[in-house]
Amino acid sequence: MRDLYVGERLPELRLTVELGAMKVFSVLMADPNPIHFDPAHTAALGLGDRPVNQGTLTLSYPVDALLAVLDDPARIRRVRCRFAGSVVADDVVTAGGEVTARHPTGATVSIWLDVEGRGRVLTGEVDVDLS
Amino acid sequence: MTLPDIDELRERLVGHPFPGGSFRVAEYERWLSHDAMRSPALAAPLLHPVWILLGALRGMGISIDELTGLAGAGAHDGTVFGETEMEQRRPLRADVEYTVRGGVADLVRRVGRRAGTMDLLTFRLEIVEPTGEVAAVSSQTFVFPRRDADA
Image (cartoon, rainbow over all chains, first blue to last red):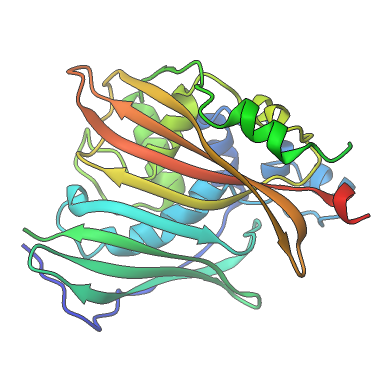
C-alpha cells in the first residue's frame, strides 16, 4: 500500500478544460442549464462566449491528482471543498495537493485548483484511510 | 424579486425532506464520466468519488431549479456552489441501484463586504445500498445572492 508523508506534494495535473467534456457532463447530469454548454447563452448573459464548467467537474480534477497516487479509490473517506471562482471552457488549470497531517490510520491532504491567469478557484481537504 | 424573510424561510425549509428517489449509473455512463473528468483508470465497476455528488443530485427527487425556487430565488439570480462535502464509506459502483434520502439541513443569511447579502442553503443526502447500508453522504451548500437587499 502506498504511504503518504507530511509535506509530500501530489504530482500536478495540468489540463485544458474542453467544452466537449462539459457537454457530455451536462447530459450525464441531466443539467439543462445552458450556461454549461452554450456559448451564445453565456455571451447573452455578459459572461463572454466560454461556458462555465460544472462545479462537480471542476472538483474532479484535484481529486484525480490524489487518485493518481493512491492504489485504491476506497482510501478516500471524506472530501471537503470550497469554490472561490469559476472555471470556463478553454481554461488551463493545474490541480495539486500536499499532505498536511499523518495520523495512525490515515492522512489529511490539502487540495487545490489554479486557473492560469486567474489564480486559485478551489481549495479543500481530503481524509485518506491508510489503515 | 423581493428579499425573502429569513425566519420564514428557515421555518419552512430547515428539516424539509426532499422526495428522494434512486439512481443507477450504467457502465457507459461510468466510462464517459471518467473520460470527461480525466480520471486515472479505475477498475470497473468502481465509480469516481465525485459520483457521490452526482448521484445525490440525480436521486434526490427535486431539480436544482425547484430547489432554487424553494429558496425564493430565480434561475437568473446567479446561484453558485459554495461548500461541498462528501463522505465515502464504500465506493459507489456502476449498475447498482442506490436510494437517495435527505433534505435541507441548514439555511443562514450572511452579509459579505464585497458579495453583499446572500443566503446559504445546505442540504444533506445519504446514498443507500440495496442492503440498506449507507454507502456515502453528500452535503452541499448553495449560495443564493440577494441583490435586492443591497439595492
